[in-house]
Image 1 (cartoon, rainbow, N blue to C red):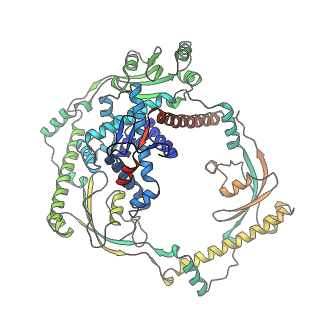
Image 2: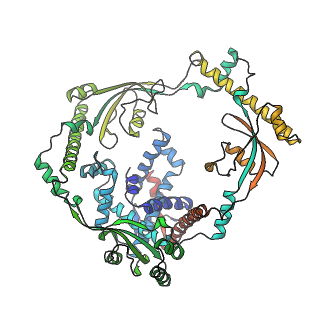
Amino acid sequence: MLEAIRKRSASFVVKLLLGLLILSFGVWGVGDTIRGGIGGTSVAKIGTIELQPQDLSRDFQREMSRLRQVFGPGFDQEQARSMGLVNSVLDGMISRALFDLAADDLGVAISDELVLKRIRENRAFFNMLGAFDRQRFQQVMQNNGWTEGGYIAQLRGDLGRAVYVSSIEKGVTAPRSLVESVYAYRQEQRVADTILIADRDMTAIAEPDDAALVTFHKEHADRFTAPEYRALTVVSLKAEDLIKDVAVSDEMIAALFDERSDEFNKPEQRRVRQMVLPDEAAVKKAHQALVDGGSFAEVAKDIAGADEATLDLGLVQREHLLPELADAVFGLSKDGFSEPVESPLGWHILKVLDIEAPREQTLDEVRGQLIEIAASEKATEDLFELANRLEDQLGGGATLEEGASALNLKLLKFPAVDRRGRDAAGKLISGLPEGDQFLSTAFDVAENNDSSLTEAGTDGYFVLRVDGVTAPALRPLDTVRIEVTANWKAEKQAEAAGKAAEGLLEKVKVGTEFSAVAAGAGLEVTTTAPFLRRPDEGAQGLPQALVGKLYDVRLGEAVMARGVNGYHVARLVEVRPADMAADKQGFGELSDEIANSLRNDLVIQLGAALRDRFPVIVNQQAVDQLF
C-alpha cells in the first residue's frame, strides 16, 4: 500500500521513473554486480549506501501482499522465490539507491514545504469528506510498518529522483526517418471481401444421447465445477456508521481552524509554463524567437523539442520552485516570459499564464467544512476506540456473537461466498466489507477459526469466522443437463462451421470466383471498410487472427480464421499505403510516442552508467539467510 501511496504522491515523472527503474534493473538483474565482500549484515552496498535486511524483507513482504491479490492467498514465499521475486525487489532497491546518489551529486534538494504539500494532497490520507486527516495518515503508517520519518524520507527520495530524471528527458526528439517507417507500417490499410459461416446456421446437429453428454460432462469438468464456498460470520465496523452520532462543539471548530489555518490561507500561486534547453546558445535562440512574436508552444517544440503536454507546470507557489526559477517566475506579470535562467537542471525560459492572489478565509467562511472534518475525525477516533474494545472482547474469549452483542454491533451471516464475492447462485453479494483484503482473509482462515481484526477499505475494520467450507465439486449431470447439452451443441456447430469454411476456402484457392463460392453456399459477400493491422484500431469486427493473415498474403489470395460466432473466409482485394501528409496529427502523436520511448531508453542507459560510477556489491549470503 505504501508503495502505491508514494507513487500517487508525486507527479507523472515520478510514476514513470519508478516503473523504468524496476524495468531496467529487472532486465539486468543482479548478475552484473559484485557478490560478497561486504562486512556486517547488509544485503547490498551501493556507493556509500548500505541496504539492510529489514528493508529488503519489508519491501519483499509488501510485494508478496500485492501478488496474493493476483494469485490468491495460497501464493507462498517459495513460489515467489522461484519466480525471482527476491532479486526483483532487491534490484528495485538498488536502482533507487543509484538514482538517489546521482541526484545528491547534482545537488538536488527537496524542500520540506514541497514534501508537506505532497502528503496533504495524497488521497490515501484523506478522510471520508475528502480532506487530509492527520489520524488517517498515522493509521496508514502504523498499518504498513512505517514511521513518519521513514515515509517522509522515502517520499523526499522519490521527488528528488523525479527531478534528476527530468533533467535528461528534455530535448529528446524522434528521428523523422524512424517515425516515417513506423507510421508506414502501422497505418497501411487493407480491404477484404469476407464470407461469414456462422455457428448458428449449422442446424443439422442431432440431439446428443446420454452417453455423449456423460462423456462431454466428464471431459469438460472445469466448465461445470462449482467453486469453493465459505460460510461466514462477520462483524464490520465503519466510521460512516458512527458519524451521525457525533456532536461537534464550537470549541472543536475553533481549535481545528487554528490547527489547519495553513489550509485556508492560500499564498500567491501562478500558473506557469517552462521550456528547458540544453545550452546557452539554444536558450538564446528560443528567447529571441519569443521576442520576435513566436508562440511559446511552437518555439518549445521547434527548438527545445518539447511537446505541449510537457510544458505546463500547473499552479505553483514560490516554495515549489528552485530559487533561481522562483525569482524569475514571481517577478513576471501575467502573460510575460522570462529571460533565460540557468539552474542545475539546464537553461529555462518561463511564462506566467495566470496569477492567483493570496487569500485568507475566515472561520465563518469555512465553518461548514470544519464541522464535517471535525465530525469525520471524531468518528474515526470513535472507530479506533470501538475496534479496540471489540478486540479486547474477543481477546478475552468472547465469541463474535458475544462481542457484537456486548457492543451493540450488527452481526452479518453469509451462507455461501466464493472468491469473487458471489453467492451460490452466482450473484454478487452486497454488504461485504470493502476492499480486496476481506475475501483474501476469508479464504486464508481455517474452518471454525476467527480472523484477526483487519482493516477494511479506508475507514473500517472487520473480523470474521469461517463457519464452513464447501470444497470445489463437479456438479452432477442431472443438475446441469441443459447447460451441458447447450455446450455440446455449440461445440458441434463450431466444428461443422469450420469444415464448411475449409470447403469454401478450397474452392476459392482452385480458382472459383469468390462471389460464386458464397452464392453456392447461400451466403453473402461483405466488403470491409479499410482496416489497420493493429487490433485496437478498428478491424471492422473481423477477428484479429484473420486480420493478421490478411497482412501476410498478396492481393487476390484468400485465408480463413475463427471468430467469436463462426468462421470467416476472406480474400484480400485492396492495399492502401499510409498517407502521412493527410494525417499530420497522427504523425505528430506517433512522433511523441517514439520520443517518449527514447526518453525511457535514456533513463535505462543512465542506470547502466550509474552502476559503473557507483559500484554495486550484493551480499548473497545475507540475502540467502534472510529468505
